[in-house]
Image 1: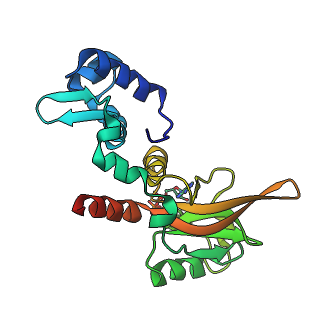
Image 2: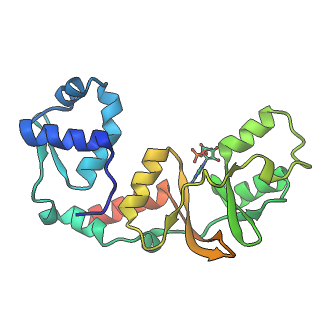
Length: 212
Ligand code: ADP
């Protein structure tokens, strides 16, 4: 099995499906007292990881035989380092204006912010829009003032499973994750950015696996 952390609700869904298969998402939603829309990401994760099987117009089955699921097995072999791309990085002092130029020139939606070679923040399209609406002087204000900062940054490591990265992207509702190497320097965690894994990388992987 792929080593993904299942939420309490995902575990409840598995138990329900085990007992009542085949069962539709509507019926599961009713039993859990939530809407179908709420369940959608959970069901996507459980079927993507091969724990549940979905048959159109029939419903969900518990797939005790997930090891036999070829797609799952293939995903299991893919690591974040296999699919990551080159990250766009700026330093904390970079003016917002320059960071926006970087965003356009490098054709990305998210930029990672570093200080002394260590990851300190993430800045994305919405942050730039917010700062523009807020009326700040984008030539003067540094990107460090508008970024999402540590410890609120969701990261991933190169040797983690690609599926695990996809789950983090969905759960935290972000477009991309910095791929980091963690070391301790004088009792402080040092995060070296070595790559980036985004929704695009995951989509490409999905297409590649389906081709096979
Ligand atoms: P966009 O701004 O293009 O919609 P996101 O949905 O990824 O992109 O970003 C939404 C918010 O989440 C922004 O405030 C951004 O700083 C933050 N964010 C983006 N990526 C991460 C991440 N890996 N960890 C924590 N916060 C992030």
